[in-house]
Image (cartoon, each protein chain N blue to C red):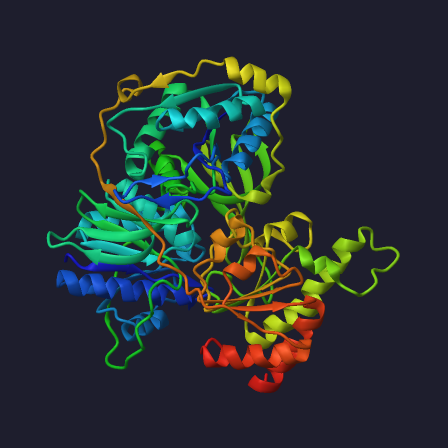
Length: 346
Length: 259
C-alpha cells in the first residue's frame, strides 16, 4: 500500500492531544510522497476514535482490536506494528514522541532494521525521498540536522507542540479495516499489575501554560506548625499547594518545578522541568522563585513567552524572560491569581 | 545476577555548547562528565549486582572521550569496564549503536539485567536503548523509577514505571533491559580509593571483530549541528506594587495572545 502509517495514541479511550500533531506531520509526509495516511488504532473500542482520525487528516483506519491490547504494553503493540510494517512496507511510520510513542516506534524500527528520527522538531523530505529532521542535541543547547541514509520504512516521532494539529474537518468517516493480532498472551512476558494515576494533574509536555516554582517557594510567610518537621519543606509544599496551584488552576496550567525544589523535597519529581526532568515548550512559562540555572533552561528555553518572578534582580532567569517582575512571589502570585480571575472570569 | 550498565561522556551540564561554521559541535575547554541520567543507572547497577551476588560491568560505545565516564564508573564501584570503538559504528545512528551494544552484552555473557539512564543528552535520544533490547530479544522496561523486587530463583522482576499519566507497576521475566529515571536512587560519589583504583585501570577496547559482528548498515546520519535560532531579546521590567505588576502583566499576556 505504501502509505504513511500514523499511530493514534489514546489513554482511557481518548486520543491524547499530541497524537493529532503527529497525524498532521504524517499528512505532510504523505502529501510529499503522494501517498495516503493510514491511522493505526490498537485496542478495543477504537471505532469512535476511527471517525475522529478522519477529521484530523487520516484517509483510512487500520484497527487491531483485542482485549489483550487494552492496556498498552510494548511487546504486544510492537508485535502488531512490526507485522504491519513487514507486510505493507509503508513509506513512513509517525507517532507523537511520548513515552509510549518513542519506545513503540524504536522497537519496530529495530525489528525491521529501519531508520528512525526520534523527537523531531521539524521535518523535510529530500528529492530522493529521504526524510531529514532538526532534533535537539546536547541537552537542547544545539540542533542536530539528521538525515535518513538507508532502509525501507522511515520511522519518525514528533515532539509535543512542535507541529500544529490540522483544523478538524467534516466529511465521511474513513474506511476501517481490521488488522490481525500478532502475539498471543502466552508470548508476552510482561504483565501490567496496576496503573496509579495522579488525580487532577495536567500533563507538562502537552501544556500550553506552565507555572513553575523553585527554591524561592520556601520563603512562604506562613508559619509552619510546630510538628511540621523541616519548616522550609512545609512552607514550600504549602506554597505549591495553596499559592501556585490556584494560579495554575485559574490559567488551566500545569505545575512545574526546578530541580532544586524537587531535590529539597518540596514537590514530587514528576513535576521537574530541566535537563534531568521534562523538556517543555508551552506558549507561556511563568517561573516563580527559580534562579534559572543552565540545567533548568535546558528544559524550558523553547517556551514562547517566559515570565520571571524573582526577588533577586540579578537572577539568570531574567536574561531569558520577556517580562520580569522583581519582588516577593508570595505577594505577586496571589495578586496575579486575583487579576487573572477578574479579567478572564475564571 | 550480573548486570551491564551502558554509559557515555557528555559535556559538563553547565558547559556552553555551540555549533561551529563547519557544522561540528564544541564545548570549549569545559570538561566532560558521565551522561547525567547514567549516574542513576550506574548506582542501580552497583546495588543490583551486589544484591544478586553478581558483577556489574560498565560499557561505553564510542571514542576515547568516553574513557572519562568509564573511569568515573569504576571509581563509583563498578567491577569491570570495556569500550567498543570501531570505524564501522556511528554512535548517533541508534540502530548501529544497538547492534553493537547487544553484541557486547552477549560477549560479556551470563547477564540478566542491562541498565541505561533515561536518555543520552548529547544525541538527545533514548531510542538506542529500546533497540538494544529488541536486538537482544529481551523485554524492555523503560522509564523505571523503582525496582520493587527481583526473584532470582524464579527469574522475575517487578518495577514501577513513570509515564505521563502516572505510575505503572509491571512484572516481567528476566533478562530485561531497563532505562532508569532520576528518582530511582541517590548516586554515590566516587571514594578516594575508588578514584585511585580507576586511574590505574586499563580499559579493554573491543572492535566489531572482537564482538563477532559485521558493521551494521548505516540508517541515519547527523549532517550538521546548528545553533538555536536567536531568542526574542525584548525584555520588559514590570514595576509597581504587586497589584500593579499583576495588572500590567495580564495586559501584556493578553496582547501577546498567550492568555
